[in-house]
Image (cartoon, rainbow, N blue to C red; front, side):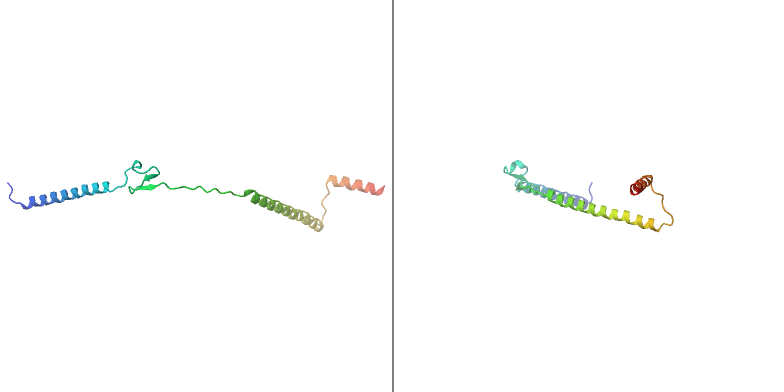
Length: 131
């Protein structure tokens, strides 16, 4: 039936190599499993946990730092600055509103008719001066 033993010898060698690799993998698995310090948190002490490297680690201590900000003083300074800037802005705006109108009216070739209230005030002032 079999005329050549070379083909069967190659299969035999491959089976032996695969078997040896499988044995090494199984032995390596058991050695790594036995060298572990822990497999779950239950294997460690009460204040420790099992890490990804299968060793027991202490729980990290988290310290919460309380920071007290002093916002009232900053708010007062900001408020005072806003009030001062509003006063400066209002004073400059009043100067701009009053000055250009007077210059414009003095340079006009014709006069703007006064408002009715101004006419009544001028007439009443003339009557007071005349009496």
